[in-house]
Length: 168
Image 1 (cartoon, rainbow, N blue to C red):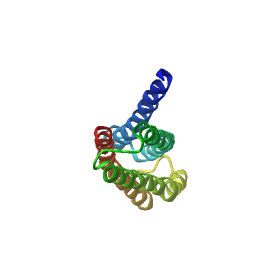
Image 2: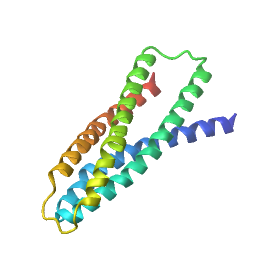
Image 3: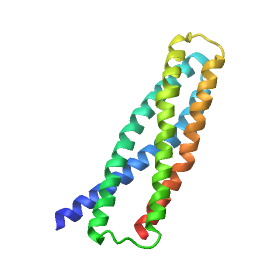
């Protein structure tokens, strides 16, 4: 019995750490990395921003997969422990949380599969000594950052909904 409780606690911590890595990575990118890159000349800034995007994307996919796996396990473990008799309001909160989480994953998919290939291609075509950002590249980055800002807003909401689930 003690090993089951330990495994459930470990799984919950892994779930929370994964969420913190994803939201923290997004926040770091928005509030620290991107402004720092903005102070560089255009050529090196374009390369640095693309390299940072690739690192954030890798971290995000790892975190998303861990969140999904540990979240399913947490739901099943709690359901088994309570005979799937959850408190009032549990299912609506769960539905909203899952919807917002899936919206975040959808936004991330757009970033990774729609905009990232264009960003990578345009970055590789850009000369290192360029003096200003080319318009097509700037346009794709603007869309990519818009999705990142939406996820930065949704992440804490999903976190608070998870806390609400734990209390219901």
